[in-house]
Image (tube, rainbow, N blue to C red; front, side):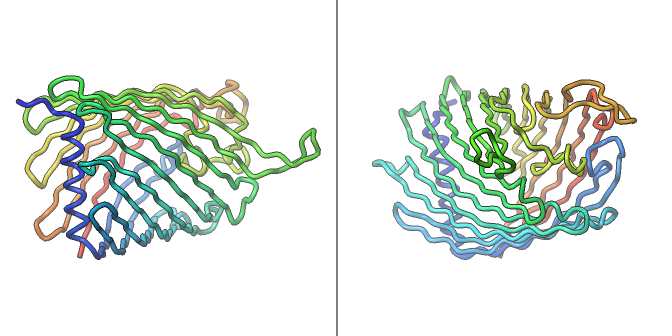
Length: 367
């Protein structure tokens, strides 16, 4: 068996992406998915729900010898059968531009821009927002076995009903991939992010000041081919909160859900370890199993008992999960994806001591 170098792997991936771009100068892809979730809010209340999601992606791609670009629109509608007020929709427009460099056109500069709006109902109208994002990244080959990546991303989130929680985010990232041995790839990666919240109140200087949080994440991933068509990936990363003036909607409005807006990763620190097994069943079918565990030591949240008394100054969770995913594509372009996820969360706050099972079926119909 030949040694799989980083360069060869990236070239194959690039050819696949290029083939897709050339095939689909015009993109029109409706999609539908349904999810059965026995704990939609991920807490001790164990509220069940069934979510039907509809999506539409439409756009156009341009491709030349060294340049490529995609202008696209994506719309989503998520309908909740039991917690109907949680039904929401989002609309996003994006532009992605790429430029290749080098004699073999393998090094790549990529830039992306997007703007979107999200709309919610009832109590969940707190989520109503506008999102602006921009990113730039560069990938370059240092040798046949060494690949470097670096990038910067900006996000600005503006809430219609809770302007004090508006924020901007800046993220710098870098990684180094090494083809260490036969069928083995080692990737070291690091990321530094800062989130700045809307100014509120007046500081000692007489100027208004907002909360801010900074986080450093470093990790290592190892990919290993086992036999033909079977691979394994091990990953471990640790995130440190360096600046901890976190604003928390959990404290202000109560818990709605542990998602990006109300309980994002800047709110906690700790170790996250996982293993993923991938089995290529055929040229058009892939099966994956992922298992992991994550420590979440919250920097701004206390742990409470059921009567509201403080149990600990800092809430501490251990989140364990296992996920199975089967994806199948067909010659017509139609694709089918089925996923099952089981989550167990152990916490010193009884309200967040829970389990969660979710089954998702997703269909896509590209034209």
